Length: 140
Image (spheres, rainbow, N blue to C red):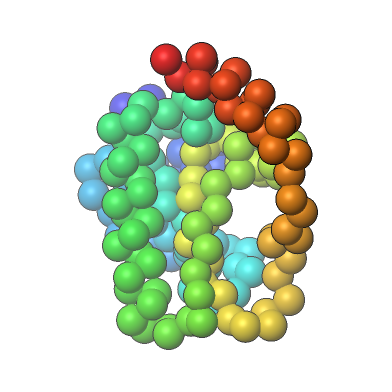
């Protein structure tokens, strides 16, 4: 398993920094965020160091999302939030602050004041069609 000794999440995995562990298996770890946006705000990470979504192997991403789902279920049963967000920030433009892949499992309450939603604004259908074609070529 790869790790980065300068990475705070790698140090948590190694037991060098304490955390409030919720769940772990051989590939993943889930723990409470120390700067929670709401009670129950948790993180699900791979134990191996992968800086972001694009550099994480698909099979490992599947393991991380399964851990996030398991934690989300426990949060739902224990805290009964009004909703739940899964958030993955990828890169500085998305406000990624720790460059080790992580999924936020974020319980939500109506009117909790968290501002991560955007308003709906119809797109230009011609521009959408052109962009879809360009992306389909990349995916082929």
